[in-house]
Image (cartoon, rainbow, N blue to C red):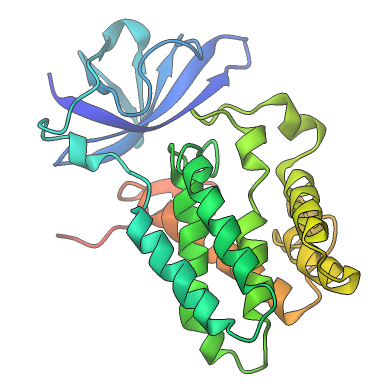
Length: 286
């Protein structure tokens, strides 16, 4: 049997009430998603675990398997050839370098110390949580990688903007924009009650507002920075309670979307239909 490593998992329930899981699996030759029927949320395999199948069904590109045909394996160590395929949090050195450069770009800002201090404190918790339960950065540490990508892109695009922007406002908002996901997901990406009751945008905005007020940031500045978090999904239909109405808010919205969409494309198998994109993703030939 061919061995794979699980790089993503979401749980679901059929219309008849039966549990299943949707696995994203990979080895050196191929990567694809498949549904495994009659698998409960707490059943193996988890992300990072090896798995193989006695048989699979392929119905017009949609793969599936029965629970009895699945063989969960061990959690591989670094010597296993598939270990390196598992996505991992960005290194602390890369995170620190990007934050230091952004602080340098904000040399005249009264908030540069806040940016450095907050970034230092958030690295560890962000490295333990996913950015989503599926679609993009859906692995432990994905939240860190998503925030890092946005900060890193801000480094490059801020000097190219046709109009002046407050890099310090953007950096603070990016650091906090998905802060609520530490509460709305558990470390395996399962949705928690806080997501249903409050949502991550509200939790993130409140946390940012409290942090800025605790540090005596003027109220008009607090409002402009918190607005960036409240509007970062870009549309009310996508969960933002307000629309982006500043250069900084619009920029952070597009950086958020670019990081999410590009990770979705990168993690999609060749020619698999991705509902979040509304299209199939043809991968370049090796």
